[in-house]
Length: 327
Length: 170
Image: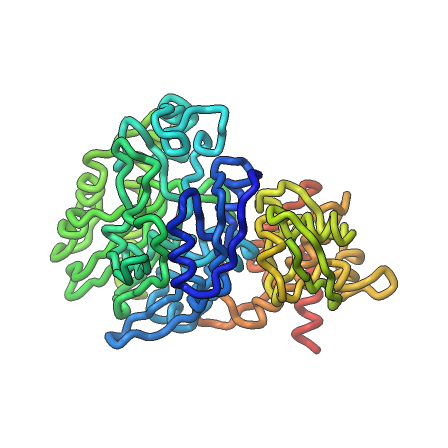
């Protein structure tokens, strides 16, 4: 690990000021950042410890939603009684991710900002446009079983690894950030950037901007499901995952909020898919049509071709479970 | 940098490079070699310790971030002549072969039983709002962050179940 200056921030204003410096990173849970620093994939010159800031706690908002402090751990968020009752898809997604030890450390803000697990991003002996802009992409013709089929570019086919963020996107979460120019809210829908020709820039955050909270709208109701397909049954990243909030009224789909993990460079959501489902009677043919729309521009790269049919089947399984008549 | 760490009820003054992981501080600077370095990347769980009542991977955190925290390692849970209930149960049930992962398993299981007691659900919990039982399935899922390459999982699960039952009956 390269040497760095360690700064323990006493308040948010100080953190934001220090965080805007060159080659500076915030650290909270540190479970991803320190791993990458050990491998020198990331080598910040300064790290700003934000764990002593007052950014914990989960509060109810005026419109019945939740404001989740950026430092709330994945464990605490998954176990929160209000989340379990009103936003169960979020609890489920969190519990499907990582291990007990990691969930105890990983924070809400950090989880959103975790980096891809693309093998070539981690391997400094290989070119990677995300790690070293302009060096090329070894994943394209390499081992790409775990990588993306949607939203990619010729420069990068990395996936975003989070489970939590997939559920949050299905729920329509917003991200509250504080920067040197004040506080702003960003819809999670507009938080991540596609790789295009700058895969090293992953979000719309400005240098020094600090995530202070995630805001969930009032409970969406419906049936909430998080289905994760992976290579082993615990402690593995998603090959494909689906977060679904679906409501059926009088035999027709009244609401469908769907987000997908393992498919793209960000938790994926496609309004066209949801539009095709709403107002229709659930059927295998309808689910297939929804998959056609979702996967219209999907492109495999050899090793991950299987994700296209796997996504179709996983979506059909989730929609069929979500719309089946209550037993 | 100068810092103090509170480990197993004792305060230690240390002078560490900020890069020092909590694991390296415990092993190399305090001589507490119970916590093991397996992968050093948070994948194996051999380094698991309990900080402020929570199990974490000590390899994936910096010692300097834990000033003032109450840190418990396997040495703080029991001693050869005074084993903790889980340590005794691991011996009784052959919950190890080479023993390298055992301190991490014991620390992890100790805190994990507390998580069940608090009613935290897991990925295999059917009803998110129901009471959780320390079943084989629940224990296996909750211990998935601790690998045992000797594959003593049946013994590990039996040992943990026995202690969960004892505690429930107490």
